[in-house]
Image: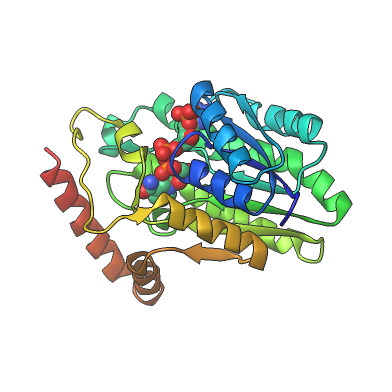
Length: 266
Ligand SMILES: NC(=O)c1ccc[n+]([C@@H]2O[C@H](COP(=O)([O-])OP(=O)(O)OC[C@H]3O[C@@H](n4cnc5c(N)ncnc54)[C@H](OP(=O)(O)O)[C@@H]3O)[C@@H](O)[C@H]2O)c1
């Protein structure tokens, strides 16, 4: 891993920040992206302290079209190469679908999916040419089985899973790997930062959330061992397993859990 050049989006907080530290401890060179520059500067400083030979950053709003393409160009210029992309930036939208206007969906699509597509599209030709590299897509357990009241968010996470599946087939034998990471509820700013519709005001929280650090360790391990898909929580693995066995039963279960959480939230 030493001196691998790693681009991470959403690196100013949560899973992205923890992932930056985990790669820094491996001696990787980092290029960090998010909107908040002061946070990125702090994270980059901490990465250097933890062993990254270079930790550079750029403040970029990925809700703007072509952001993904621009950050890859900037990363290649500043680090003089690119070995690993962690497409992680994202946020949630919570509430009944009828309260989520199409323009809200367009924005979350751009940030959670389209910007990642742009990033990967710009990064892959160079990786294929050099015959090595790795792409990580941070999706979610609800990118494999949708939950009520998270429709727009789930659409973006399903799209990431579809892209990873298709690319896995396309990249076989190229030397470039791809990993889909599916965390469950993780303790980060994500839940406070989520956009809530009028009738979905309060976030509910499960009993034992995961930590950003444990997701970060899984991401580094997935790159090292070229893992195709990783589900982090036992509950997530159970849900996906049950969904394979009985989609109808899983639909009823998720409808019940989703409705209950939603009712408890207001
Ligand atoms: N936390 C969970 O329970 C959970 C579960 C499953 C999957 N995930 C996924 O994990 C990923 C990371 O989430 P997290 O939990 O670490 O959340 P977080 O702590 O809120 O971090 C989100 C990151 O994305 C960046 N970001 C958001 N909007 C952006 C934009 N328009 N342009 C550029 N950067 C933007 C944020 O930086 P700035 O605000 O500085 O721009 C921040 O660095 C997301 O894709 C999320 O869907 C999270």
